[in-house]
Length: 567
Image (cartoon, rainbow, N blue to C red):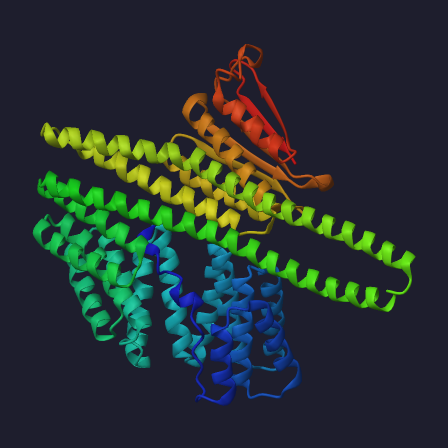
């Protein structure tokens, strides 16, 4: 999916206005770059409600508002607002506003994602813009339509026509020398590569690289160099591919893009393998492994530092509260110092208050320590084994290199394990960063993971059943343990069941989250299974117990397995 990494650059960009820059336009730019999304939504609402503005200025603020809804993933609010503005623009015969909001609705459906609905609304924008000659809107929507069709991998001729129209309009709009204009060429080159026109793809990638250099855009230069290097590998121009890959690696290191640096190292290793230079391939694989370890350690240390910072902030707040309490108690004791009985009572109260707060402070310290241990334990359980597997694969590669035996299979295993490690780390950090998340968001993340995992099992079909009302929420500890239980269940099904289908179901009825993972495979006799001999089942039950969840396993030989988790 890396080739489509920048498909949504246009969708997230601030919309281009036909009007000249104004005070409101400048304010819109500042609001767009403000990361306090909820505060921006409030300020934009006040501006739109209280100040009469020119249509182009009003549209700029409305566009910022839509983008902030996107950032917060408030899709329903966003769609309701955009549909309301379409109706209002149609009522006032504001054709330009109506076309813009059709495009924004398409962008929203793209992010949800619902690509069919996105295409429907972008094409509505195109129909209006063609009649009214809104060329900037046309350029953006032709690009978006072409990008989504290219991503689907079908009807590439239609995607090519849309990119060619976008390029022609970028020349007319004088945007062809901008990042947006260069993106048109980059995706068209990708289309040529996918459709087998390797020579044309290479020529166009060179043009993209040249334009990116003129724009001094290091990120796009590195990206385009890697795409070009892959084309050179396909053309068997390995020396040139290695040269280009090294430049991409150098730029990625300078701009501190670890994901791109990892990709560049993998690309160089592949190029050396294809050229028959296994020794250099091995050296770059070792660099890739070290890069991943550095990324892992950096992320882990960052998480621990954040936990310590939260503890320090809580401690400072506690000390402030204690100082306030102490000041109040001193004043009370001073006023009532002449009354012995009240003085004794005040002393006793203060003593027990200090004791309670000391207990609370110790409890807070213990909570932070428990959280650190839980995080370390989870990372060790889920990433430790994968790191060990990666090290074993590298040792096997080293052995084959020394014996001058084929290493293609070793390299593929290392690349697969590295990608799986990185994805597991990303998923863990994503869950831990959520103080709370809805049952629907958790289920969507689980479905995304399962889709990716089943790419290694093309013979298995995924069925999904869900019914959520949005009322149930999970904390990060519950979400992480549930995710690990489901990962174990999905892995066991794929490896051992022999089933052609995998069902994942979820609902949050009656105030509880219920998850079901079910297959139609060979099953097993539950009564004959000892959890002492099956660590996976035992681990699943322990994780469920740690968050107060129940887990029920139904299985029979020849009738598949059904696992239900309720929390």
